[in-house]
View 1 (cartoon, chains in turn yellow, red, green, orange):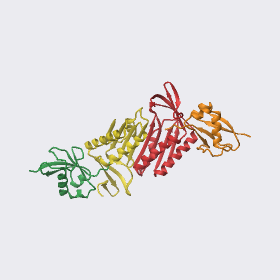
View 2: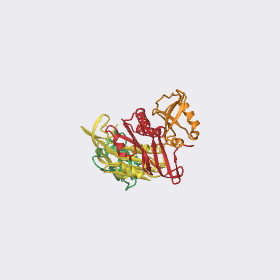
View 3: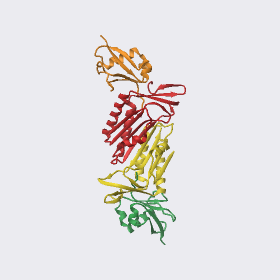
View 4: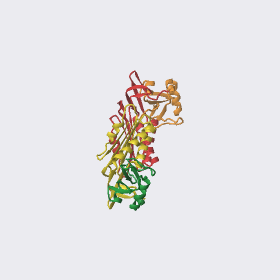
Length: 138
Length: 138
Length: 82
Length: 82
C-alpha cells in the first residue's frame, strides 16, 4: 500500500503513522521535515511552497511505489504541505512500515532523498530583506 | 540534549517529537516499534515488558548520548513502555533531530539497534496456548 | 508553418517569463531540445539557473522526445520540496 | 569464611530460581566469574539460555571484576526490549 497527500492544510504525524500501521509489522520509520529559521546564514521569516500539483502527485506516487517494491516494505505514506508556512511548521512527513527494521530506515531515507530531487515543488524563502527561490541559482 | 522515559503509561509520538523539535533543525527521524500479532509463525495475544528500571534508564541514557555525540545530532529522545501491552500498542519511540538528514537516520537506527542489544528489558509473549520469554532460549 | 505550444511556468520560471503560461512557436514535430533552445533564445535568464527540465504530460521529458500538438508542457526549474 | 551476596533475578532468571532475589555464598573477594560458576552449579538451567550477563551496581560487569560487599548484583538474561 502506498498513500500520498499534497495538501494546503497542516499535516498530522498521527494520520501519516496510522495510514501505514499494521499488526503484522513491528517497525515504522518516519521522517518529518520542518521549516528552519535560517538557511545559509540568513534569517528566514516564513516561506511558500508552490507545486505543479498533478505532476507532483504522480512523482510522489512513483517514488513511494518504487521504495516499497525495492525494499520490500509493507506500506509507505508521503504527505507534503503547500502554501504559506511559518518557522517550525511541518513541510513533509514520510511514514514507512516494514517487517524488517533496516528496510524501513533505508526505504524512508530513499523517499525523502528522491522527493528532494524529483518532485515539482518549489520553496520560496522570505527573509527580512527580500525573498528568493531556494536552489534555483548557483 | 538527550531525554529518556521508561513508563507504564501509553507512549505519545507527538510528545517524543516535540521534545527534539527545534527551529534550527530541518529534519527529524522517528522509529516507532509496535506489538506484532505473530512471532515465528505463532499467534500472539498480548505481552508483558519487565525491566530492571534503574539500570535500563542508565543504559538508555548512555545509548542516546553516544548516538548524539557520534553522529553530531541536535537531540535524541527515547521512550520505552513497560507492563502489559496489546497488539498494535507502541512499545518504543525514538526521535532524533539533526541539521543533517543522513545523520538523523543513522543515529535513530543506531539507537534502536543498541537498545535491542543492551537495555535490560524483557518481553514475555502470551500465545493462545502458553507464554515464553522472547530470545531467552536457542 | 510553425506549430504553437503553450507552456506552464512555475516558481522562478514564472518570475523570468512574467506569466504562468507562455506560448512558443516551434517548427513542425519539434523535439524537447527545440523547445529548450527557443526558450533560451527568448528568455536568456534561463541560462543563469542551475538547470531546468521540461515536463511533457506531467512527466519528465528527454531532449529527444517529439512534442505532439495538445501535449501539456511545463518548465520545471530546480525543485526544492521537502 | 564465605561471603554472602544477594542477587536480583529478572525475566526467565526469576522463573529459573523461583525468586526475585537469591543469596549465593562465595569465597572472599570473589570475581564475577565465581558468581557465574556458582550460579550454574546451583541452577544448571542457566546453561540452557542463549547467554546471561551479570550486572554490578547497575552496569554490565566483566568476568574479571571483583565483587565488593554491598554491591548491587543482578542476573541479566538475554534482553528483548524494543
